[in-house]
Image (cartoon, rainbow, N blue to C red):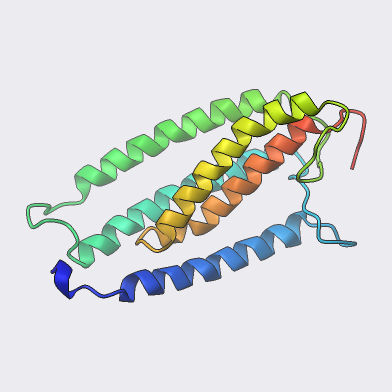
Length: 186
């Protein structure tokens, strides 16, 4: 079977991922951009952060479920894999744990958020060490999300492309909100 496969599915899935990425970026600019220039801002309140984060986890889970069914229909699994119940229950359990962790970490981080909305890519010139120390872990998280998003963009999990883009946006928005000057409303 592997010798007969072509690039048909990866190319189609990559194209759809590019369409999803463009639409997602357009939506982010529409909802969180400034009218006077191309500058993104963070979500306006904590509830929006949590709603978008919940959407990211839900869409990621849905993309994994859809990926299982697509691959099953394409006969990508060995012949002994006669049911999807085991991977569905395993992935669902994992996503419930990920959701609980994200909710807990998000709640803790929301305690340190400065006035919202904040300009994206905020940097404290008066506290460069704090800016670097906050940016490094959030940058690592964003890079991991970008890597996972790109590697899944041409696979059957391509439906999760918007979730990866919004997750990177939320990661950067959180970093910026943690660095934003408390007395400056943008």
